[in-house]
Image 1 (cartoon, rainbow, N blue to C red):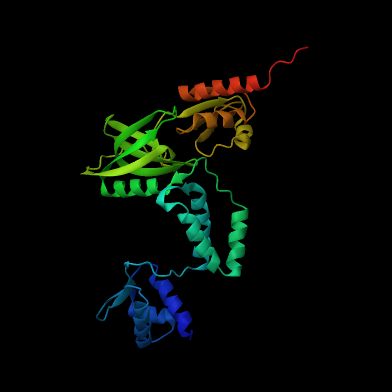
Image 2 (cartoon, rainbow, N blue to C red; image 1 turned 120 degrees about the horizontal axis):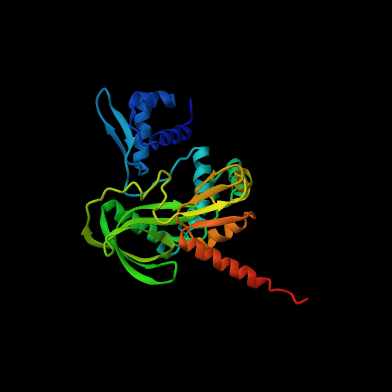
Length: 314
């Protein structure tokens, strides 16, 4: 039979799955008696774990949400997944009152990892790169998520791609992570239409006292992969599909063969300046078919490249 400490940890691990456990099933899983099980559950309650129970022949136990957050018991795989996830979050989130929250949680978790798990975490971290173009303020993510869940109107400041600052009043619906950028999908009340907003360009989120009734999302707004709406980039490459796919480093979009010697890349709305550089780096002839923003960014890139290498006098 397991010792008391090991048995308590195993009991806590079972309860933290969120399901209700019949008393007999719990006792069988722990290899103990019903009386010992009740004693162990009472010890957990004394430690602050809110264990709920239902009485009777079909009595069961479950761990309810408490006022405070007691220590968690994680399996090896859960501990590794949590640590790696926190590493990614620390690279992507910043700012506000929650500055360093992911770093702090990560440091606490890594301090208590046993050596065998530290090696696994180090191996995964060493072979993984958390790439973000701009970090997102966690207070913005949190405020928008709470407002969307409660169907509350929000106001915020927004800076568009051209650097123009405006105040926006919207109905927030969901936040979407697409190709290393976070977006907010919302109904813009002042413009009476659906809009997407880059989260790293949003400041000063304030939830108003008013609420809204959720509108049905148009099918064109959110695709199967959760892509935000907007003009899509379309590029025709004068090279076979296999050649382009081996060199194209953009992570979102679809690359399809047109014929044996050409292929077309279609990508969701993005940072056109960045995409223009990525497309040029493929190193094969191509033509930007749309949208105008990507065409303009490509022209600017071509001018900068030409100016960087002026003609040499003979």
